[in-house]
Length: 147
Image 1 (cartoon, helix red, strand yellow):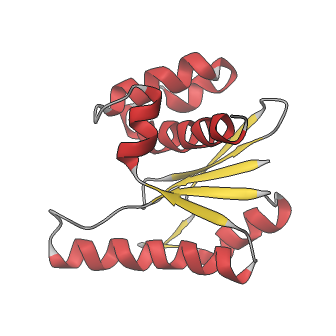
Image 2 (spheres, one colour):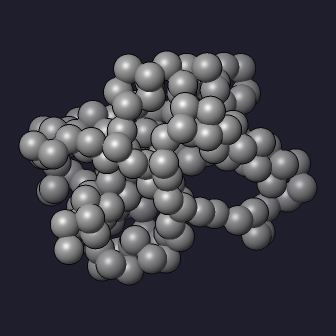
């Protein structure tokens, strides 16, 4: 199984099995922070062979937003390190270019719906772009691993 994370408070975790089954979970939040314990529990129950996460920067964010985002990203990477789950960071520009996508989040939701129609309900709202992008990162990774 390949896992992927679209990081951030509105992000998601996607688990893509070899048979094409896709499981999506919103990033667990406790209060205003990513719940590292809940993330760890997901990966203890559904342990991936490898995980792919977006490698992002805080360019254009305010100081507090950049700090909060960095804290959340650090929590996610800390969980992966603690559970000894191998991971690869990939830039959004790389995976999106390979899939023929740009910055438009609606196109990501549309592509995820086409590729994974059984999960279409999870991509229907504008705020579901994190779910769609996590699914697409996993889809991209599976394609890269099969080349």
